[in-house]
Length: 491
Image (cartoon, rainbow, N blue to C red):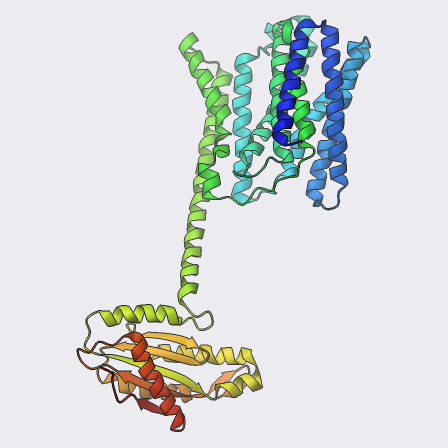
């Protein structure tokens, strides 16, 4: 059954159960809810147990499913005991309460284990989110739930102590559930921990309403709410068949623009709104409420600061990656010189600007192949890097140099004057100098072709390089280790 249809069916079942609560005798209504919840929670426990035994899952996920199975089993057993109690066995109430409390403790543990293992700022931000939501939750409880022992009849003192305990447990669990849902990645399907979190929120709200009205003496919701508990059990059962999602790394879109990222602020904003309404109505706020709100608001500010730091780091990282990609796109990965496409683009820009003359020098190494053949390609790479450094050391900052491919290099000089011929001679001498490569002395040379434009003449970079390339092959034909100047410039 598709998940959406399954959830709609669960909502319909919960609505029917709640409608029956209004017409059935109290015992029959509670028994009906307990039977349904016992079956659904047991079904979820079996599914989670099977997932925990599946070795395909990593150990952390297996452990998360194990805690989920234990939580659902405890909840199923507690409702079975509640059913026994409804049928007349008064002794069953105490262990049922203990088991339901255990289930409430285990659920957030399963959610945390099912999520990614947080480190650094991400972990701090998650802890702050849980603390801020918990503070807002307790502030709302303080407003709507009279837990002051002076406001509770003496015969309900024990129940009041239980209510305080379960409120604290549910508050922390609800906070973990909200943060789990906030970590949802836009566009991805629902996951096991997200439905578990939603079920935990439904159950927390339902139980709080039940406890609140029990303490206040309003019997309609007393001792349980059929719709809420049934819906929570149904959602948990549906989620037990889903896979665990692994949220991606923090990104600006998820941290800032994702609607799920705003979820932790909802309880805080709600608590502030309720406090503002109380101030306008009564003209005063309780001391505990004020401190809870201040603590939650301070945590929100701290969370925003950490988010800002994270976004700043992401921006710097993205900028570095963009620069690295731009460098890789325009440079030879071995020598760090410009590649041919970047050289052509920059050379074309220089040649279209105003200049007196331009000179292209093409260099092809002599004796490079024997180095590769005898010492290996790694040694050949070292030779190319050394040659690149030697050539660059002879150039000005305005000169362009690239590795055309293999053992061939190209240089473009703008307005070189007499320096062009002098530079070619120096480059030839530098190429012939011996070098030590992997413990071996290596000596290579070069054949150099030179092509120049005359004053006011416009020649494209491709044509100029072809002239220099032709001159270089003439130098090789003349015996290598020589310089040849292109003698004819095309019109």
